Length: 441
Image 1 (cartoon, helix red, strand yellow):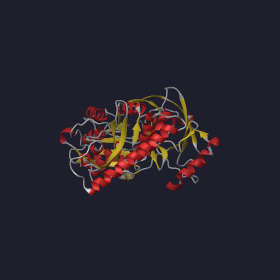
Image 2 (cartoon, rainbow, N blue to C red):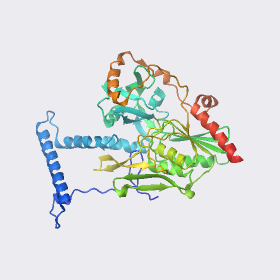
Image 3 (cartoon, one colour):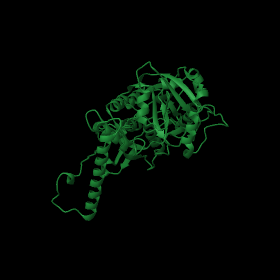
Image 4 (cartoon, rainbow, N blue to C red):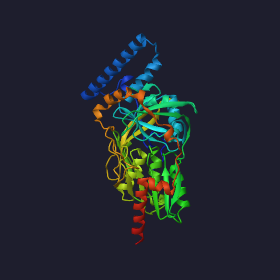
């Protein structure tokens, strides 16, 4: 796999993109264009002229007196945000924030958010962060940030508000499946330093590896953990629950530690230059012991690549609940020294050829987390009615329950007590023990 340097939100992508304005805008061609080409060029020029005219009018008459630079930035934001939920224009603040996330340290609450059915939704909290300790869960819909409704708010604006000076407070109003009333969370911002990988042992011969996000250190850290415990390890639990994703190259390298051949993931876009396939190599493979991967609705993007590839290649058993379903490729392309655009340029495909965009990875063994309680007044509405429902939820916020304190206890790693309470992990360990026994025969 060639090592091409290009930052991708969600993952790195080895792609080559070139953009150029049509030379016919500045010079006449020596050759006569075909009728269809001439028609397309005429339409292009008309559209550009219309945009220039509108820009000029708005610059002259807008009540706030915004300058042309501000108007262009707003135009770019509107253009990209209307393409899909993941494309966006990154100003200096947003661009710096994105780069800090992939380095493994950044400020804020410690949650990854996305747009689902036009609602600001928590993909997952990052383990050990203020949001995780407060009790924010994957699938929560953020209804309000402090006193501001999120119904007409884009992701960048929401993230900008949630981030702030460490040790300052913020209130989130949440709509959660199974809760009859909106929930209020009072959270204190902090510097988020992500421990992306940690390892523990279970019953001496099972290695538990938790990967919380795919930053640039993941593959090396997992490799080190595998080699450190090689002598006693007879089976591995790879926990990708509530892992919102990260860098593509790390997802590929992590999978390659367990798989010695076959395509791990491929991506296909509008341009052939964006079509790339990433394959496993025997040289990179560290272990072939039985493997179980834990996933849930908070597992997204790079997590879905790893779990989906392991599932398709029959390398391990996937346990948990259906994953988030983000299978599109965003590339971050700088347009100045301090600004960039994040653009969806392709979708990625698993070894079997299936896509997980809006579908997710369905586990081999589906296991719900913890105790499943049925609520008669639960959050059960059609997608078409979601906005109307959220508008009505705003009216209930006066009587909502503040649940921050009851969720403020720190999480631990692996203990006997936790193993019995974590149904997905317990089921995974049981399946892994059966695989170890089978392999030993």
